[in-house]
Amino acid sequence: LYQFLLSSYQQLGELESAAEILELMVIAKPQNAQTWQQLVAIYMTLAGSAKDETAAQTFNLRAILSIERAQALGLLSSPPENYTLVALYFSIHQYLRAAELLEKGLKDGSIENQKRNWELLSNAYQQSKHDARAIDALKRATLAFPQDGQLDFLLGQLYYAQGRVNDAYTHALAASNKGQLEKPGQTFLYLAYLGYELGKLDEAARWSDQAAQHADVKSSDLAPIKRAITDALKEREALLAPSKA
Image (cartoon, rainbow, N blue to C red; front, side, top):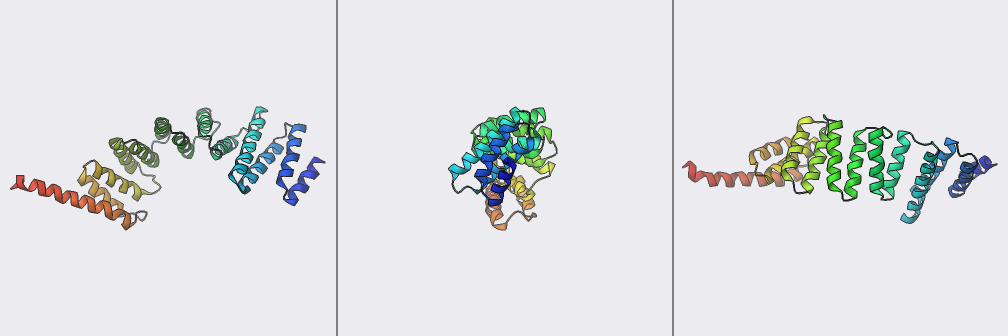
């Protein structure tokens, strides 16, 4: 009878009523993993179609509780399902809880050891205003993926946000050497800005020239830093001119 009711409500598009039936079904047969999966999926669908933030948050929270109730029974504990739980905590802005789950999952293998998950961990700490932890997460990620330059690029951005320009330059440089960058031109452009700020004008000029060779850098983005570098080089040359004479 429950199954007939569930199918009827789904056909009618009455998902809230379908969720009520599924709640009864998981009580009747709590070891049925498929029923729990259906319940989570319906709550997530309802959250996605909700017309206001409060309703969306409510349905996302119900999806979270459904996964955790199932996991207490030993169900829905695969890496993809654990990742879904993390994503749901992000959706309700519970970033520290998401970070806690990611830390545990990356350590014990219950969440896949992928670059995106390390980036997500760092982002969770950033959202929680724990910048030191965000940096630490990316540093650990560079050890897990030593050939991936994108992680060093992100790490450089975090250091720059803390005013640590030298560290930012070091990691941006490492990123350019390693490669595997999503937007290589932007990395060279970033190096040009950092080099200029640190007074490494010759290096900055070289980075701006390399940035110009990549399609992901617009000429309008490049023009200001090239002009600033050129002017600074001319000024330096003028200052050195008397000593040369």
